[in-house]
Image (cartoon, rainbow, N blue to C red):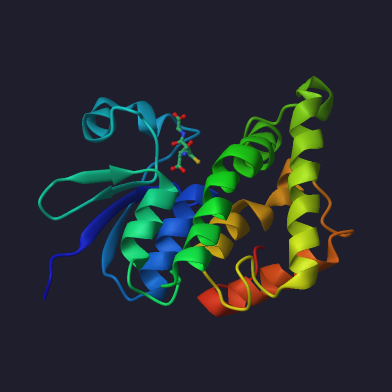
Length: 200
Ligand SMILES: N[C@@H](CCC(=O)N[C@@H](CS)C(=O)NCC(=O)O)C(=O)O
C-alpha cells in the first residue's frame, strides 16, 4: 500500500477543511496533524521549517516534498477525478471560481469571521470593506446559483468545495445567509455530495 500523505491543518479553518474533505471523498489516505493557528502553531520553528510562509494547510508527500495553498492542494489531489471537469472550458471555469475565492471571497468573509469569532473584536472596530465586499461576493454567488445547481453547471466540482468552506461559516463573520436562498440550498447540495454533515 502507498505511504499516506500528511496534512497539517487547523480544523477550524475552511482552507484546511477543503483539503481534508477532498482527500476523504476521493479515498486518498492522509494523516491529519493538528496545527493550532490562533495558538501560534504556524509560528513554531518546527512548522516554519516545513512551510516558511507559516500557513496551513500544508501537504507533505511521503518523500518530504511539500505543497501549500489550499486550492493548489485540492487541484493536485483531485486531478483525474470527477471533481475536475475534463473539458477545457468547464475546467477553466472551475479555476476561475477558485482564483476568485482567494481574491474576492476569502479575504472578506473568512477574515471578518476570524476577527469576530476568534479574536472577539467588535464589529464597530472592523474595516467596513470586509462586510461590504463579503456581501458583494455572496450576491454574485447567489445570482449564479439561481441559474445552475453548482458553480460550474450541474456537477459538483472543486469550485464548490473551495467556496462552500467559508460560505457555510459566513454567519460567524456576521453575514446573514437568510436572504441568499440559492446559496442556502447549494450548501446542502454540496455537503450531501461531499458526504459531510451540516456546519454546526
Ligand atoms: N491562500 C492560502 C491561505 C492560507 C491561510 O491564510 N491560512 C491561515 C489559516 S486559514 C493560516 O495558516 N494562518 C496562520 C498565520 O497567519 O500565522 C490557502 O488557501 O491555503
